[in-house]
Amino acid sequence: MRAALVLLFVLTACSPGGPADTKLTVLATGELADLGPVLADLRRDTGVELVMDYRGTMEATAELDRGFDVAWPATGRFLRLRGAEPKLTTSIMLSPLVFGVKASQAAKLGARPTWADIADRAAGGELTYGMADPHVSGSGMAALIGVATAAAGTGAALRPEDVRCDRIQGFLAGRAFGTPDVTAEYVRRQDEVGGVVAPESTILALNASGRLREPLEVVYPRDGIVLADYPLMLRNPDKRAAYDKVVQWLRTPAAQQAIMDRTFRRPADPALPRTGKLATPIGNPLYFPDRQEVVDRLLQAYDRAGTGARVIFVLDYSLSMAGPRVAALRRAFAALNGFDRFYVGEQVTIIRFAGDVLEERAITVSRKEDVDALQAVVASADLRPYTAIWSALEHAYRIAKPGTSIVLMTDGENNAGLGLAAFLGGRHDAGPTYAIRFGEANPAELGRVTAATGGRVVDGNAESLTEAVKELRGCR
Image (cartoon, rainbow, N blue to C red; front, side, top):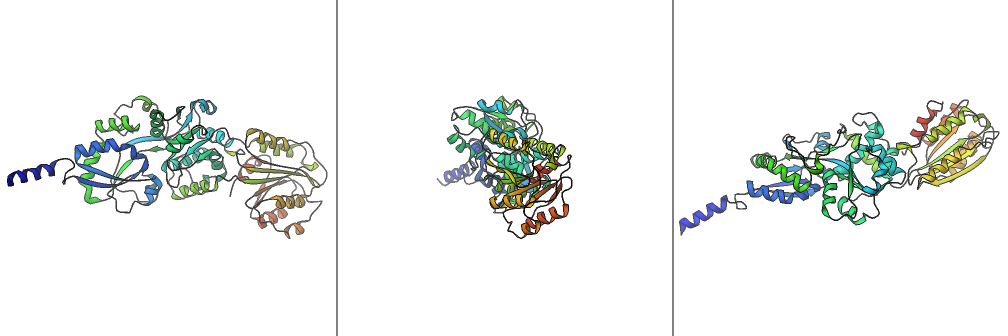
């Protein structure tokens, strides 16, 4: 009887699930919740159980030091920025960040769209989508990186000065929701939302789930993608043997095939053939930012989006603007397209002035026709005598709400209406004035006004005007 009990104890200790099994606590990205069947096979074959604690990738990055044996984020790049990436890390599988769009709307993006194309359609109200909050989700942050990199146009890793809030706001104008679980929210709102920004595996799983009334086409932006490589990172050196056993099993051809078949992620092993939709080339990877400040600025831009920027253009239509100067002004507005276009939700007011205010037109952009209406105001040939700069600017501040940016364009000396001293004696705390100077406009006076309101002066010669308008209409 005693021998039988000893034998029973030994058999129990050696069998999977018995007392000799090893447990590894894992801080994991929530995207990996679909690995349940694979992890069950892992435990059966190795005796190692992974006890998963699911968080968003950005949230997990911030909580890495809370005593977990292993970390399993979507990417280790955010840890690398902070100098906190563990020494022992192994990529397990791959999935690019993509844009899933309804087949009925894919034609609007063209055959091989870029992030710029997607942002342009979103800014114009032609495309709505869901995207996870980048404060907690690596996929949400990857989308911002893609858009900001495309907007910068440098072909290199983003620098802090490349992150332009106004350009990101145009893309985010199309965001219908930003919940952590974009899959469930998209399924719930699929009739009203055009697509979703998510890992390729998420889009393919949705299409295969039977929960969509219209399948999503997978768009791999032509100007580059951010690739998640799901690294398994050892945090507790005492668990090295168990970690090695897990990595070895997960990287076997059988396990890699199971991951591909069950979760629609690409195998980390380049020799293993991709099957089905996973055989589609993903294109070139984007450069990942190499400075934490870039990520911080992207989050600031994200936080500022959603309410719609307010900008007032105060435009000089005095007779001295006739000819090339007013033509340059019109070209500058015509150039506001792509990342620099007026976007849905943006509140734009145009004030034309000469000896007094000639016209005031305010529009909250909701469709392309609204932008056409603004262009029609700027196209006016109604030029008049005299130049009441400070009266027109005072009028702009009377109608400005807090947080408004004001862009003044003038070529002349103030010779009508309110004087400079009277203007400066008023209250102008609604927002900054940016002055674009043409011709003979007094730089000293413009400098005093912009300094008093928190703005600055920009030369408005024909070559620089378009770039000046793009820069100065941005959010602060």
